[in-house]
Image (cartoon, rainbow, N blue to C red; front, side, top):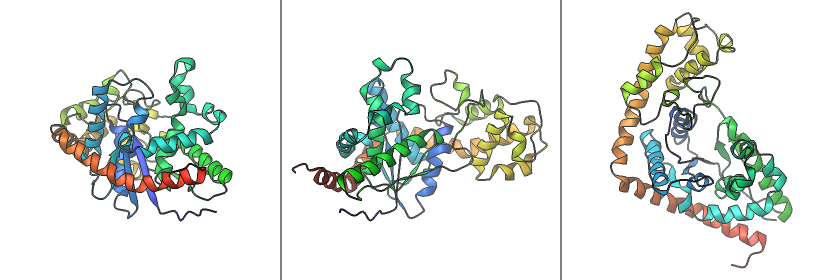
Length: 338
């Protein structure tokens, strides 16, 4: 029996499909930066292979990949402490994904909520990649024997599938090779909502630019969008329970809490009873303080793509040092002659 001695390792990634926004920052980048000082080896990936499951203009994809990398770095991620790379530079992702395509079951894939949402009634015309991409996501994680994956609630089902694939592989081949990965879901604003509709997730696909704060927005634009964010006429409550039926208010308080590293209850102890005419300027000032330095640094980095490309190449080389032995051992287990 092949035994695993799992080393604690964090892996997470974001699709480079343009318009990095506040939801990506609070739900992912900010947490990634915080985790790099925890003493756990961390890998952060621009999942450009996932991006092409739907059509991408090649020039736009290259630019979006670099912009996302710039966002990671500008947010405070240190490429020396963590491994930062884009997925397509590490061939082992695709190699392990094929093995997992042969382990995963069609029924598992058909139950994926995001497959149903993205393909909708047009399933016959959706790409095979869109259907099978949860197996690639499992490979992204398990090719590094990652033990923990920071994700939003909407990705939790894919981590469960990753666990199912690892369990089935280990069972089918009589080994204990792949670890059973744990999702890491935490934080006050891991699911940031639209500034125009607090019941909908903030999204780069929303036709209204006013619905989101882009990480490339300058200070004036950030403040303007917050001032115009949808609210309700009531004063802020003094405890979180008072936000339950107030999605727009809850969203803005959650954003304040996440930006200020406070709990929602702590924020409401300070601002309970205030009208939004008082709270919005406070939130705007905080957002500008925290976000405008990031947008400024992103702009600087994007003026020299060669600096970003060098960081990604170095990260990919380091990632392959971990991934290649895992794929080699997987091939041996499966019975492939090497």
